[in-house]
Image 1 (cartoon, rainbow, N blue to C red):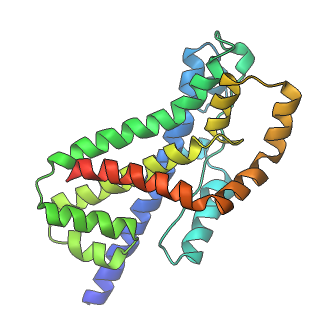
Image 2: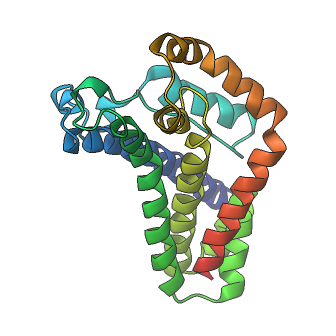
Amino acid sequence: MYFCENMLNEIILIAFYVIILLYSVILHEVMHGVMAMWLGDMTAKYAGRITANPVSHIDPWLTIGMPILMLIITKGSFAFGGAKPVPYNPYNLRDQRWGPAWVALAGPGSNIVIAIMAAIIARVISIPSAAKIDIINNIRAAEWDSLAVVISSSVGSIFFALLIMIIFWNILLAVFNLIPIPPLDGSKMLFSIFPIKIETMAIFEQFGFILLLFVIFVFNAPIAFVLNLFWLLFFSLTV
């Protein structure tokens, strides 16, 4: 009976883990459209993408297929995905030079703001510091069975765990998307600072995904190092 209950709790935790990722990605994309709208382009609004309705943002592979496949491959320890990119027309922006950079920054910026808010709320949750550290370590290691046991005795622990998941995913999304390689947001900011020809940009966009995979494979240690620095910073704010 205990084993079945604990297994159910693990499944629920993984479900929240994936749902938090989904809505973190959706908000990231929505904020691109909102920023573009503030700067004069209504493309995202007319396309019905300024909405929290996941149906409008779901990509069959990025949003569903890839996270499920990664959960299967990693045995529930890790998942990652994305949403359909929110469309916008840079030629409609009032600021042609810096407008694309602001639109690009809106996504990672929103993730950082969410992580800060989650850290502040987590800080005031009244559970022992040792329990908070245990929850953080279990979520980072995706130890769902241990996490289910740790949070089972306290409503505060459950809410703290959800907030740590929010911080985890939003920091990952912010840092990852700031890598200056197409199609990530960092490339749009880089091209605003160092303008290049449209033809050259098109080549980068065409082969950007291959280059991104290469960078992730070759420079995975530095990327992980930077991610860990930000995670440690935000998690330390919660204890």
